[in-house]
View 1 (spheres, rainbow, N blue to C red):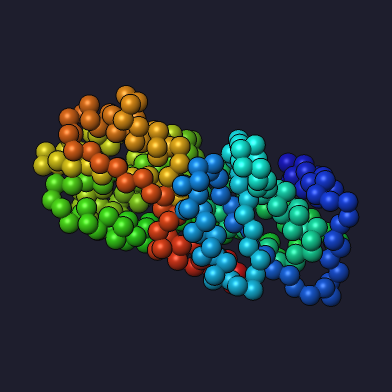
View 2: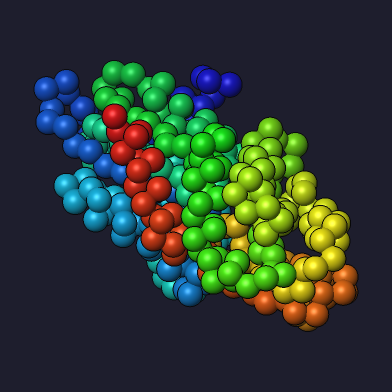
Length: 296
């Protein structure tokens, strides 16, 4: 498998340009940061990605910062509708290698280290395995937002601050929708985050996911334990408030959306806050901090 990844990397390097940028050992350092997002084709949602990219550029003014999207569907849609070509992580790394970057730091925008993160890790490991003329001197991958119990405690603090006005009102619960990653150990980070939230603000948050456990049925069952709950505030636990937030979470005309299911469960006052976590200043600070940790 490793030899296949290396072969794929070398093929990508060949296709990235007509000439390779050989990297002699005495060549001056050239550092770059590759920000990797799933992507979005919604201009209003892209503000979350832009905030993290801009915050990275501001924190590292002497280092070139580039952006790649992992979703080919979104990339093709943007190319067609906006005439804008956003590279994949594979082509972005190959291009940076071709341009002579010696040190590259890959920072994903993922919440948890799930399947998408594993794919990027495999890619980075493949490039790192290339030795000799075309190798990077230093190639590292940063950790997602929720990679430890300490990360979950920090995220809980950010969320409590983010929803401070709603939490100041009695009988209000914040319902958060994460993406989820089925059949992957990293999905447990959502449960760890729920524990952190319960420890700091008992009963004020209910967390579920779109594609794994806990699901909306589990969220409703949790809410039913507290008969005093009157108001629900729905918000995505995602960097971008894109398709999942606008459709799976908040679509009032879809009986399968979380909004509709919570209404059907008897909750009359259901509100939405459709702003991606990436727009939060505290999330940007954590993002930059993780890049700094990676560079050490």
